[in-house]
Image (cartoon, rainbow, N blue to C red):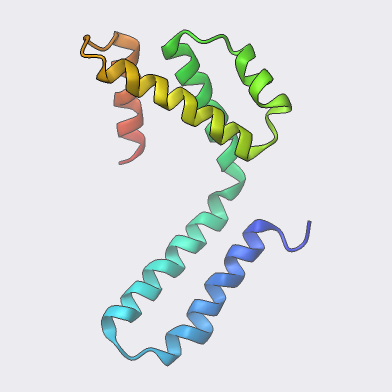
Length: 122
């Protein structure tokens, strides 16, 4: 597929940096354009990792929640459809949230998953 998603993202970044930024004199807006351009560059570079990372997190959630991995294959045949994988992931996250909000003490597996998720955000 041409242009690829990464190429499209970098194209949007170029529009900001090469066309919009030179026309903006306000320093705050310049900073925001710089931030947006950096975010787009990061997204373009990380895009190929999205589905594998999502599947990795789905597998971790399935383990924590005691869900059979086969459910992923049923929900997302071949694990190639990102929107379906995201929807399945949201369902797992909702189950995790329900478990956390139930008032009972989170299992060691849930606590470990939450600690690892927090660490990835750093």
